[in-house]
Amino acid sequence: MAEETASAALTLKDIAREAGVSLATVDRVLHNRPGVRPDTVRRVQEIIARNAFQPHVAAAELARGRARRFAFVMPVGANPFMLQIQAYLGEMSAWLSARRLAVEMVITDVFDPSVLAASLEELAGSEYDGVAVVALDHPSVRAAINDLVDRGIKVVTLVSDVPSSRRHHYVGIDNIAAGRTAGALVGRLVGQRSGKIAIIAGSQGLRDHAERIFGFNQVMASEFSHLDILPLLEGRDEDDRSQQLISRLLAKHPDIIGLYNVGAGTQGVATALTEAGRDKQIVFIAHDLTAMTRRLLLQGTLDVAISQNPGHEARAAVRVLLSLARNEPILSEQEKIRIDILMRDNLP
Image 1 (cartoon, rainbow, N blue to C red):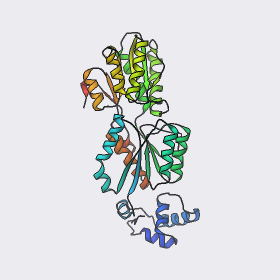
Image 2 (cartoon, rainbow, N blue to C red):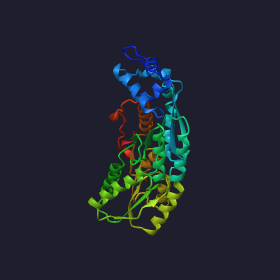
Image 3 (tube, rainbow, N blue to C red):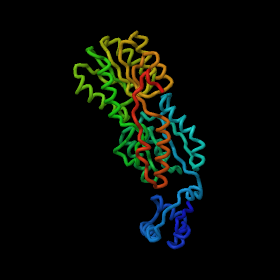
Image 4 (cartoon, rainbow, N blue to C red):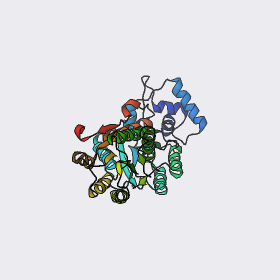
């Protein structure tokens, strides 16, 4: 509950008294939460409108009976980029505490729709104000997201979107543009050579991966049609699996001249290239700047990392959830995540 004030000194207690309801009911109406009868909602809203009531955010946060709780549903495993996001969320502890916010990690298999949906369903029965999820685009996941929304929980998709769901906001880059960027880079960096281009992703079920593949293929088909695109491989963002898949592919196709890694598993891909003695021959494009991709860029194994700022994404996801919980406008320009093209010569 919140003891909210306005310039006219009207408080939630005044509204509750006039409407003949509890403070908790007024708080639910103000923040569009379920569980209030329609006639009660209308009565409270009429009083608010008649008195030109504007909530005082600082007072409201101080007066809440409990801290706001946000859950971040993140993938299991050692994906370096996802671990960076988690680390940056940890660094926000002082900022979160000052605003009476609690962020909790829920680690699950985001590649398995039934497991991910079950994890989201468990959150529906908890007292969370918001959920950020690295989401798989699948009907069961979409239904689980919609159920959270129906229960009044704010939902933000992070890195990978499910636009057909009723999620409130997406935080991440334009992945079609990222894929097109990768296609343009591969096509230009291979020069006048002819040959085959390999693509490996975590899963086409992740919309960020699917959109990157779509953008990549768009550019390759329209601008570099002389290059032969090999069938997509799926490595589940795992180094060992990615290494095995790429090693077999290199042995089968000695004329591969370019390779695009859509997701994680970059170390595994790099190891396969190095062991085959082709790390300096094949144009290699991957995503995200981590300690590992930085090292590969400096070594010359990786030519370009198409990056997104994990710290910005972590902070943006929290700020967007907080704005949604407070029923405040989202500052779209502030929360927009840009695409960075990094080579060893312009590493930050």
